[in-house]
Length: 240
Image (cartoon, rainbow, N blue to C red):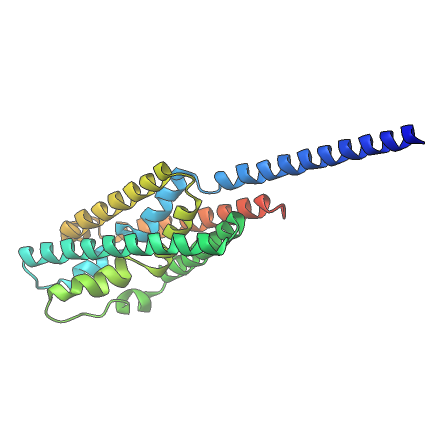
């Protein structure tokens, strides 16, 4: 009898150990999946699409019509400054709030993917709306330095969905080096915005319709990347 009990206990221990090992392996698999949900190259692409110069050139030219070059430079520089401060504050606060509430990473990635996808679809549809293109940015009259804050910094450069994407990426950053890399990407994107504003009139005069074509292509790329993030998130949760 004692021998049977001993064997039963041994089998139970082995069963629990194997079960724990399997659960650990499955958990490690999920972690591995979540780590690659946002490769750094994808993060760079997303931030460039959502915070970058592709959507600022046209509005900037229209808003600063009639301004002299020194005023244009001051408006552009101040808009970048306001944008940088806003992204820094939003990124830090948003990441801390998400971590405090313990939102699982796959769920967070899925939410980010849905946001990115919906915004990309909206941008793609807007490319074909003549009414939206011609009336989205009303003429502000005589250019003024106040344009740097609104509407240039908010909501043209720093969009709500751009802030959402930045918060998601920072929450997924596994260490300080990854966070610093994301910060460096944001700085590069803001620098690209500044250069785009400085040369906006030349770009419009030289490229013209090509800018709209490039914008449409980038929107389609964003749709595809958003769907990929959604797919990877569902796989990480074991739903695909």
